[in-house]
Length: 197
Image (cartoon, rainbow, N blue to C red):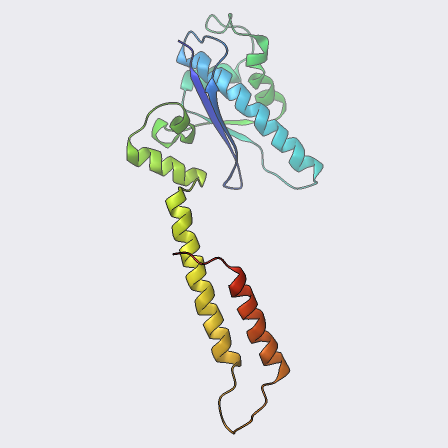
């Protein structure tokens, strides 16, 4: 049976890329499946590195988190091993990334491996934790956030009105132009925000 692969690419704590698919190659072990997944994920990360370099931005070395200790060992050491002799050379390119590009290999506990949510069924609590780490929101979360934003805008508008509205001190008092403009602009901004029910 072909393995399901998943990877996530984060930059400064923000999810940049995530992907899962059924592998084209039939892996003979979970170690092989991890190598194939790591290689594909690193291709995506290397593309991001090149983009950041082209923009002239500073960056730290890329870190690859893998929950398979045997896969991490095979990524570090060059040459064909009994366990990798049937793999395509392209699936072992990860070794070149580690050796020549300074990619760091780090262990990650299986429970903390965010990519697991894309490859296998998880308990609800673990799934929700990984979803939160990825920054993925449900439609209900978005609706609740929109409602809070609208309520905050209404409070802000009332605050502006209270601050800039003239206090009645004498009949026929003229409202200063800057105050009138501020109130009109806040009304215009709020009218453009759709009402949630």
